Structures are given as C-alpha cells and as structure tokens.
Length: 352
Image (cartoon, rainbow, N blue to C red; front, top):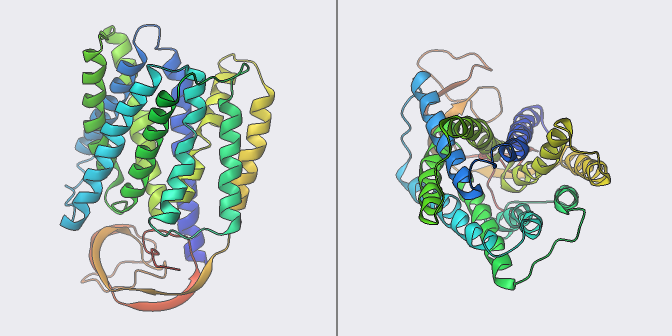
C-alpha cells in the first residue's frame, strides 16, 4: 500500500472498528433498559436518539448545509428505505415468530450479504486474503451468537424474514457507499430521522407503551452514541476502505459487546476466546492485504473533505493550502492513469 493509500486505509479501518465498538456496546447497555420498555419500542427510541442527537450536534457545531448532488439522491433514498424502513419491518415479523437465539445467529448474515452485493453487483475487488479475512470475522461473530443451548428455528418463514432484513441492511450499506463522500453526520442523521419514527409507530401500533422519562432519556442518549456516532464512523469507513471491508470490520461488534458484558459481570466463555482469535486473524488478513495495479481515474467534479499530498488532490486554489490541511470545496479531478497500492475507496471504483 502506498503511503497515501496506507494512511487513508488506516483511517477507514480505525473508523469501522470504532463503529463496531460503539454499536457492540449497545447490546449489553440496552439490555439494562429492557425491563421498562419493549424491545421494538427501544429500537425506535435508539434510532430517534441517533437522529436527534446528530441533528443537535450539527446545529451546535454550525455544520455547513449539505447539498447532495441530484444523481446521488436516489442512492440515499434507496438506502433509507432499505435500511430504515424495510429492514426493521422484516426483522419485526421474524422476531415475533421465532426464538431470539435463532434470530441472533441469522443476523450474522448481514456481513456476508454486504460483501456478496459489493462483489457481485457493484464489482468491488476482493482477493483471497480479503475473502478469508471476512470469513474468519464472520465465523467469530457466529461463535459469539451461538447460545449455550441449541439455537432453534421452528418455521422457515420467520427465518426468511430475518435474512430478508439482513439483505435490506446489506443493500443499505452498499447504497450508502455511493454517497459516502457526503457529510457522514448528516447521512446518519437522515437515516435516524426516518428509522426512528418508523420503529416507534410500528411498536406503538402493536401495543407497546412509552417508558418512564428516565428510561426514555437513557435510550435516546444510548442511541446517539451507539447508533448515531457509530453509523457516522461506519460511513467514514465505507469512504476509505470500501463496503465489503468496512462491513467485515463492523462484524466484530458482537465481540466488543461480549467483552463489555463480561466487564458487567457475565462469565468468561470459550466462545469469547475462540471468537476473539478468529476476529483478530481476520482483521490481520485485511490489514496485511496488498492491492495495486495501473488504473485510470475518469475526470470528475465533486465536493468533499480532503487534504493535499495524498496523490489524488493536487488541484489549484486561489489561496495556497498546505499539504495535510483538511478542507472542503468543489474541486475537479482531471483524468489520470497511474499505478499504486490502494483500497476500493471512494476514489478507486474502477473495474478489474
């Protein structure tokens, strides 16, 4: 990996792993709230907390207004509908008719489906090390999900619904990558603003009741951190390392959740040790990947945060900008053909 590519890649790796830490921590913390609120209503409150929290975050920081390019609007709408509406609805139907143990195991399909869609539909490149690493991380997630007893699925249709939810979220991940150069906090806020009310309406329609003010406040705060900030970091990961790799890193979330549960008093199990080994080996395989060849960048004009000196941003400015200074404006990339090691990031979506 070139120095510029290595730097960007490490940024994406750190962001995706941080997203997994925050999201993984949400499970044991949310469990503390479940005594006062139904699971589905809690999911709605978490999403609402994500949207509201990020909205306030942007307001306080006076973040510039996002202007999504017209060709990117369908990608965002598709991601919101798939991940914020269809996914939760399908999961609800599945959970209503099958044991939680079986659903937990099936939810690991999201990582596989994310990678499959990225590779087959969007032609994201993947070598043997990437595939092996993804499978190792997925195997670790499965080990964590398997309960001490035997997971059971009594009917095929609830299982199909849960896998369908995973497919929706996998599609969401791939569609979000198409707009990943946009402000990550804005994208995450939009998704929370849709998914939150959707889940709340569904839960209330099924007879759920709002919990106490303290529980509601705790759920909103947890949603802001574990769903909002986590999603924003995941989008940064998509931007820098591509969909399949970011999805694989995010699949380590169950491990971090299990570690936090251990700190809160749960017993140490063989599953945690095995899963940690598998996931660590998978991440290592990804970090030691090398992918480079001659490729062509088509001319494009767009806007996103960037620095100069990374090998892809050498355009002129009315005022000089020092290398390494992060800034944002509309800029044009001229057509370029060169060779270097790289990830399938937002600037390397060429065919192979």
